[in-house]
Image (cartoon, rainbow, N blue to C red; front, side):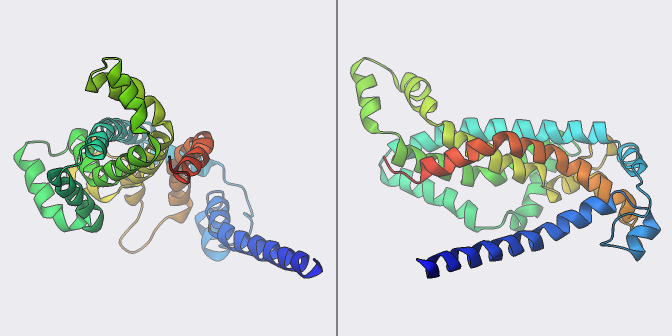
Length: 276
């Protein structure tokens, strides 16, 4: 009993040390946002000598935050909505259709999880340019949907197969429900855990995506937050006292979103751990 207690204490101490090590970059980010450029260079890990709260105002104005935030939000919300809608229907079809062709289609989607999308950048660029969608938010939305679709379909298919009993649909079928009625009235209400999990994962992916906006958005009026942050990086020097507040402004919406969705993350993990 005593040895077990000692092991538990040692484990807790180790976890606390790991948490402190993990917190160092966050601490560095936060304190640097409140320093002058000189103080950030000479005293990187120390507390600010003078608290420069004006750095946030300067970053807000310099990166045109309201516009960049609106563009990022439009892209993220649109992509998440399309992914959940299409992923639900495609995942249901693949989960309930047991044919050789459905298996081949699912394998093709799984290939999208294996092959990095960066390998198809040239093809994506040519397709978007041919369609006349360059420098539009819609182009970024479509590409982000294509990038995240394999993962979304995989999550929905596996969840429906393992956690949505076919017997419920059989009962609805006996009552005369059509396929759309079974999907929207029986299946979809049971998909809340996987929907919330997908929304969280895809939101993080799309919000933090930098390469796609960089390729397809050339006008500053369509810039997203990460593009505005990257403009602060010079060829020979970087103004860290301005860049770090920009990073905080970009990360803050995600932190708030994560705090609100935290309980759904736990629910999704718990639901995925139980089959049937």
